[in-house]
Image (cartoon, one colour):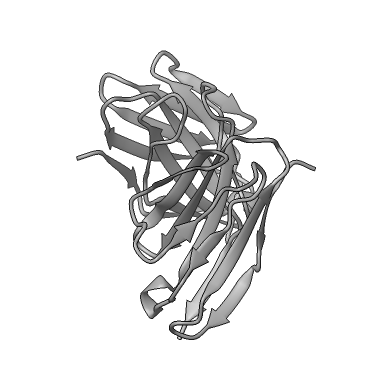
Length: 113
Length: 114
């Protein structure tokens, strides 16, 4: 069964600290892996998309890594800000068109001052 | 501004009263999709469309209908809403057939069925 598991379920960190969110998947076939940020009450916004040949991709203070062999991905947030408080969703695409997506349940990050 | 617009943002209705949630995108995207988001379950796909007049079921299509008469619009129809359809609904769009095209989501419609 295709699944995407995220950990931890929730996380609280102090402003300015770094953190890493994890995503493990059992999806086949695999086309690409996406990270989305969802602010409370808003729709998810794309952070990164990586194919199996990409190990790392950055978007500002967000850096995603992908190990296609172990089927693991991580999202690293550097120098966290209050605005980073959100839910982070890992999504694996079965096809290149992105029409068959397997969603993780998300990690809720709270950044406190 | 490139965006996906959903209306209404909030909707309270009663069991059995037909309703439509509208979705419109201004990015000329071929692909559009509806999702519902429930606590502890994440996002689940209801229906999707790969182009005008082409629609298909997602993971949880029961109780919903869609239509794609125009490229920009993809309304979600609940013919006879029930309380288990109380949820947060998102419409999304993307380019189809292009590698790594991200989904663009609307800001959601919170539906309560009493």
